[in-house]
Length: 310
Length: 310
Image 1 (cartoon, rainbow over the protein chains, first blue to last red):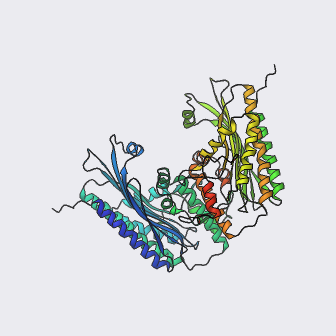
Image 2: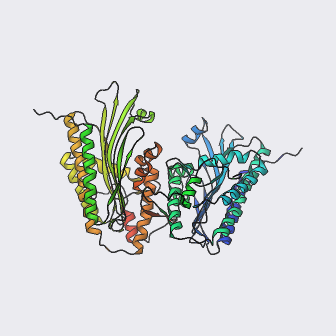
Image 3: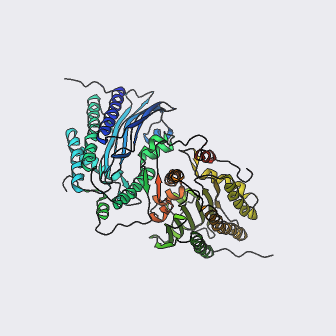
């Protein structure tokens, strides 16, 4: 019998750094002229990261691809959440991406893969888990593109566990929801958290899944970049894009747990807010015309749409 | 001895509705071409409001002047905050304003005056209090204007209580603060809450103060409209205005208690988010040039500046 050797923090960090490199290269190649600028930063409490931002590309108007690996003493709030009664150290690493394209016919995309570990003096193994997801926010929802996107994610999920997509697709619907608008942020995708390994082999399997999610990001987005970058649009579509970006801002600043947690716990603000669009607009009580493409998109910003079988 | 008769809810509501009318008239007159559009709305749980929005005026690019008077059963969270152990009904009324001017040399302004009342089956008098404030967010801080603004508010405060300004000015500095940016939103002003009447005469005195705060809003802002509407600006000042509006969005969506409370408790979203600017921009890690007017403004977005005696 072959026993899987333990996946270490270092292995995971190495993969995430390499993933960031490969995604940035793929996006630069697909964009044509845009180049990422890197800011390396250190966290006063321990660890740091590499924030990479591309501004004013040919396809990507503003996008961020961040890597971080931070550690330190867990806060009282974290201990309480995890039902821990003794002091603990945390370690967290991940890659986070948000890309805002110039052309309103190209969707906004978000991806995150992360690994978290807690260790206490008395627990040798410690608690650890993986999380992540990819979700798509088209300014105009195109059913065929939505189907392809979800099918691509389902294929990745199915390779690892036939129940993953059915679990993680509704999780994304519920997570990327804007209660005060009664809208989903976009067409969802997959979202997962607290995937806790039970042994070394299970940890290797979970890590393999997270690697596949990270690896499918670039092929998915460069597909949409190539397919839609040349689509024509008018001021009407541009205005709608700016309003939808306003909703993106509302979700991220009001509801996104990661953003809120970062801002409330003295994270590096510029890295957390890399997700902000270059420009967002608000019009009081804007209502698209009935039957318009904008209204058709709103009709699709709902939970529980079975995109794969639609 | 003359005993003040009790100020009723109806008296306060009547004043707030009239205040909304007078402020909208004064702003329309000062703007020239802009006109407020009104949406009357009802709250499913009880009460309602009148939201008024002016878009694309000559001076005001987007502004909202809202009145509301709502009532209902207090939520468990409210009861807990107030240390009440039995069910209670709440009543809340107020006027809220945010105005975003077109010209970056004209400041953004915010005003709120409000009255809150709790009644339970066993407490006949009930708890009640006033709150409110006015704060100014210049895109470019001009010391002389800041001094005039604070002096005008201090004069209003001093007419009612010589300690008010010294209490309410730091309260505004602390309230209108953006922790994740380590900046104040603007140059502050006054902010007050939980002004609880101890008897009828005291209630009349507090109401008189709140009336004066409401009444000084239009003279203050129409002064800045008239003074600064014709000042010239270039793309540089416009770009800075859009970035500062981004900060305004960050404060309102991440930190403003009123906005958060409204969005999390099913308030009327469009009325709550009347405060959003027509357009806001984000540039990753934007740093103004040392010594520039933009950097000089950042240097003044600090707590505890004694504007009156500066």
